[in-house]
Structure formats: structure tokens, C-alpha cells
Figure 1 (cartoon, rainbow, N blue to C red):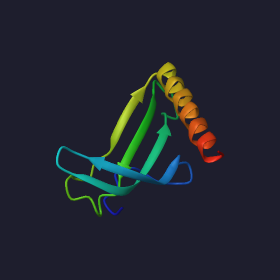
Figure 2 (tube, helix red, strand yellow):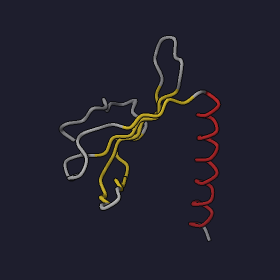
Figure 3 (tube, rainbow, N blue to C red):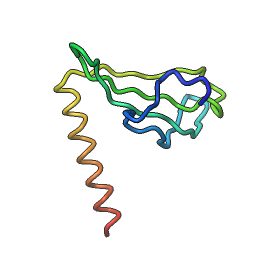
Amino acid sequence: MTDRLMKVNAYTTLDLVDAVAKGQDFENEAFAVANATTDTENPDCVRLQFELDNMTEEHLPAHMEELELTPDQARTLAADLEKHADRVEDASNE
């Protein structure tokens, strides 16, 4: 990802994850970076960031998506992720 907008280092949540960019007339699989972060000093929100590898993406310019979440929203999302992770694990164990 030569045009990367996100900084990827030892603290990045997921530095290589499968992703799909979907539009009305396209669907493209790519690698991505996903990160949950907050400001080091005086944090006022949790940021959930995503950036697709634009080396193979033809439809979108280099960009990053970022959600700014309240602590309650971050916890709701985390709980939902845990629930769905359990469902996938349970299905894999059957």
C-alpha cells in the first residue's frame, strides 16, 4: 500500500485483513488495514479506521474511512463483534 494514509505500526489493531469494496457497478476484493484508536492525550472519542489497499482498486482513489464513536457506541460495537465471532466459532466447531 504505497499511498497509505494510515500509519501502520506495532500498535495497529489489524494490519492485514481481507476486505471488499462494493459499489453500484463494481465489487473488488483487497487487503486492508483496520485500526481502533483514540487520542493519546484528552481523548474525546474512539476512532475505528479502515483503509483498503488501493494498489488493485480501480474505482476508488486512496482514502480512509473513519468512524468516531462514543464510549457507549464502541462498547455496543465490541459486544456485537463478540456475538458474531462466537457464532462463527460455533459453526466451525460443528
